[in-house]
Length: 153
Image 1: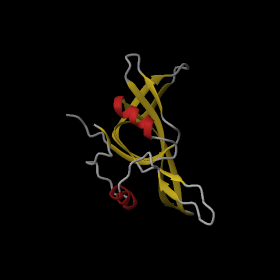
Image 2 (image 1 turned 60 degrees about the vertical axis):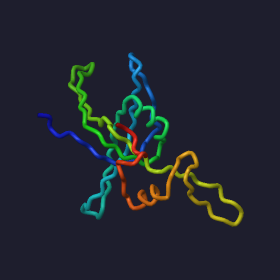
Image 3 (image 1 turned 90 degrees about the vertical axis):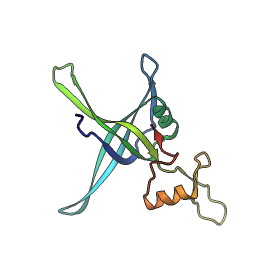
Image 4 (image 1 turned 60 degrees about the horizontal axis):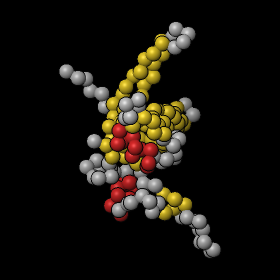
């Protein structure tokens, strides 16, 4: 019997993802996200930031490279994976990462240049198709994993 190994995490992409190919030609993309946790400490609310590495494969990797730009919000569904190795100095090392099965990006917005007499405003990026329903769901923090805007398989 397999044990449950499932992760759902939201964060922000900290640098543009890069696509690599394995020796057999399979696409792979590693990217890092930052996620915040707030808790009540002795001096009020405190923030703890975690930086996590996400790995995607094949078509999902290619889609992440295309859409996952630095600063963009992201939701990842996947599993934990622990890599272990021996360092040149003989010490045992390990790193835990997330292997993504689904990746969903928040809508991309661009800042419009202010025209004379108006304030600048955030507008949806015309390269990023958005329906009013998707934008409303994002503003309410709702996600529907059955819609076509979810990448992965």
